[in-house]
Length: 193
Image (cartoon, rainbow, N blue to C red; front, side):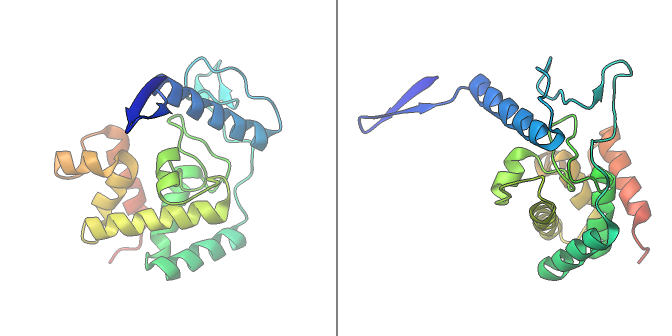
């Protein structure tokens, strides 16, 4: 820990390694609460209990996809409230999590719309595994990105996947294979204009 002083008041600020340890503990706690089993001690930050160590691939999360009528209701409600097309929200959810509310990516993104912990916090999502909160937060993020990129869906999707900083730096969809595949896959699922 480093100690920062300001006007004679001492406050402790976590070092980067302490912040990572806190985030790791938070993710493991959430995984344990979702699976009902104690998460194994990770070899790396993003190890989760459903990692198939033998195959080296992620197995499907230990929950079923959300029921279509319930998910459709959440999508339609948020589409109306945020002014984002329901088809876009649905395609992002399908691509990100396969409609599984307990999904956690290898990079730490969580829930139906795969919100990173910091992004979830910025969007006031207290529980990223709560489907209602996650879809609301993810839809808000899509709305913000659509506004930032003047309705350009490809740039919006690229920023959702790789981050707006990377899209801005590259001046378009970054030449990251995962991001290019992500954007083309979702665009192919959207109705043609």
